Each structure stands twice: as C-alpha cells, then as structure tokens.
Length: 166
Image 1 (tube, one colour):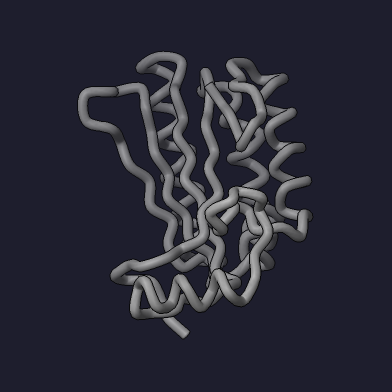
Image 2: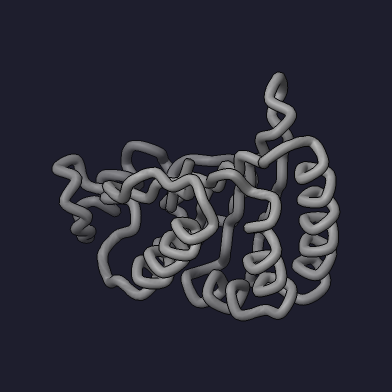
C-alpha cells in the first residue's frame, strides 16, 4: 500500500502513477516536507532551526533531503526480478550521482516480499537530478511490474551519526 501524508493508500499500478504525480508536486512545494514544527502545519522558520540545534547539539544542513520507501512485492518471482532491477539501479547511482549521499536498500527480516529504501540527498536539487537520471526513470517505469504497493515518507534529518554536518 502506498501513502504520502494524508493521501490514501494505493495498491495498483495506476495508483502508483498517481503517487508519482503527488511526489512531483511535493518536490515542487515550498513548505517543509515533514512539518518540522510541533503544530504540524508544515511551516519552517529560524526558531525551529535554533530549537533543533539546541536539542541535538549539532545542526545539519537545512537543505539536506531524505526519504524512506517501503515496497511490498507481488510474489517471490517478482521479488527476484525487482532485486536485480535495484542492483542495476544502485550501480548506476554509485557511478553517476555525487549528490546522492546515501542510497541504502534493505530486505526485511521475516517479510520476504518487503524492501525498504533509505535515501539521503545533498539537497532537493540533488534529489530532482536523481529523479531525472535514465537509470532512475527505468526503475520507476519497470518497478510497477513487481510492486503490489509502496509507502513513501519524506524526512528532514535531525540528530544522526554519519550524515555530513554544516
């Protein structure tokens, strides 16, 4: 199933295409993708940054952009083909995307048809550049053959080990 924010969960290819349109609109929006402030309005301001810096003792670049995606695959045959598509895509990401700081794919213990991706990009432009790459376009087109549903969550990095700081 796929959901973004308040968007409904989706389970088929046409709904996944709609999710892609939602993601494009989301990337173009000017508001904070996660709603950093406590009121959840999505507004972001310098007071939020200062409070975050005090709370975590370290300030990460505001422009850094991350997301987590969970894919639920159709069956074991689809999972095998999806894993090969992912391997090909990750190889190209490593070779051609300096703005992609981290692109980690995972299997899920006890759920052989689930995959989790965790991506961190230098900034929103690096994410958009990732989305324009031929290998990413291929992945986005072909994944529908293997995926039963997906869930995407956009993140704003806070306290962490291993992410670049200002």
